[in-house]
Image 1 (cartoon, rainbow, N blue to C red):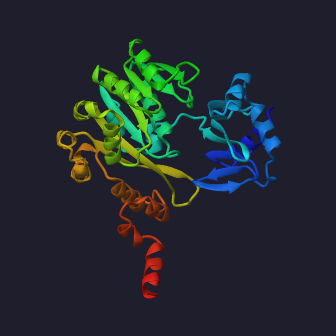
Image 2 (image 1 turned 135 degrees about the vertical axis):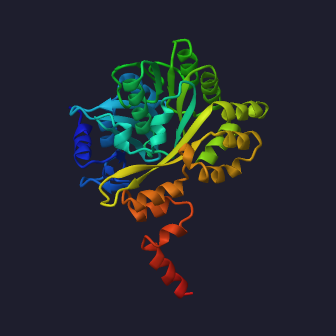
Length: 363
């Protein structure tokens, strides 16, 4: 048993989502979004390095020693599965372990908007799940793949960095490939996948122009493509796709989005009222004819107005989704306030209202 497994076991027992290890501080657990230290001594450089290198292969140690970060999946002796990032910084080695739930969550269990399940019925086009790091994008995509795997007979090819949830083929065949283990890049992975008779291609992260371009080609040529971007709204996602590609390709990109982009789901994780868990709250853009026209005519700034009127399509803005979840007592109003773009409607539901009035009375 690797010594680091003891920390991981403790973290899982306490329900953490992540564990952070760094020189000069004790191990830290992320509990419902907040970092909490374990009651343990500050980690020395040699001690932490020995903990981490104990679970690395000789090839991984060589990569780390060359100055590169490491991304890989790790299964502890207790059976817990983790996505790991190991890095070097000024004070020495460091690592972040993301806990991967042992049970595959369903779309219903995640309480995602009903439109998400309907989007899985499409045979062609692109669906993007976006949000900042740690907002549950991988979990949502895993639930979508599981839904497809259960309800349709498909060839699903998943390109990940690293593999997190392990899918067992059900009604569909699910092929999971890992970056740097089975493929050199996401772009090459998509190119190879298109020669493997796929119905669905999951691109773990569309992080560069080559990957975005290949994913667009796949979506245009009769495949359902699921992908992620680190963007925090539907508007920013559209702009990011346009800006990612060379200027001479921008008109072609806008044309692609108007015809083949099905939806953008942007999510945040917000604490529940008892502060013991977090649940996803989603902004949803469905590319209707009206939205497609706005994209083609460079009027993406008007997309939020179209989303406001697009409830029949399943569209919703983040603030509206947050307010509905607060009203339904599904999330904590204080935490929702922090994620809201327009905070004024939330002030009456939180302690921020009294704080704001006291500060104005003191001026």
